[in-house]
Image (cartoon, rainbow, N blue to C red; front, side):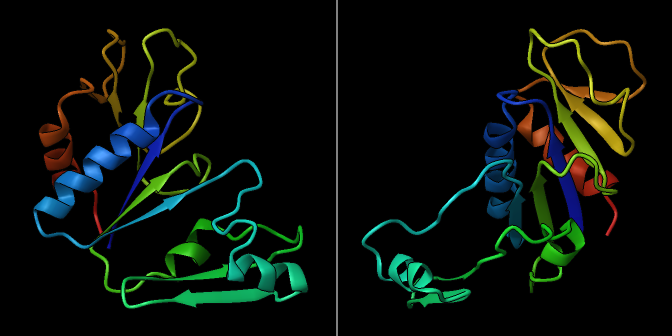
Amino acid sequence: MKIVGIVGWKDSGKTTIATKIINKLSSKNFRVASIKHAHHEFDIDHENTDSFKHRLAGSSQVIVSSSKRWVKISELNNSKEKTLDELINQLSEIDIVIVEGFKNENHPKIEIIKNDNNNYLFTKIKNIKAIISDNKLETDLRIFKNDEIDNIVDFILENFNE
């Protein structure tokens, strides 16, 4: 499977670009998965749901399943966070994984640069293959404008190896 990282500073537009790329790849009949890194505590179930009550009661793993989707919630209890490779190994039957965040992991990435930012990740971390920005930048990396989703997807399909 191809792994495509989307990185950038907070509020740079990572999720917006990631969802556009996912939508375009899905429309081309690729099986797409996404992995999003969170720097904060989060819940996918909420108070008064059965899964929340099961977790609160002490269940360290909860699976919720229906004919539409299923999800597994695993409590880590502040133990070591899963690595990107461990998370990718949980996926099955996928052509392309869009990874939002995980900027220090060793997968190929595209950096999103907001107009008012000049603190570039591509000068600090490796494996950035392209940049999405409306800024003029001094780099040999391929630069796309924010609205060039078709070209970005073509670049991903041609330049990100399995």
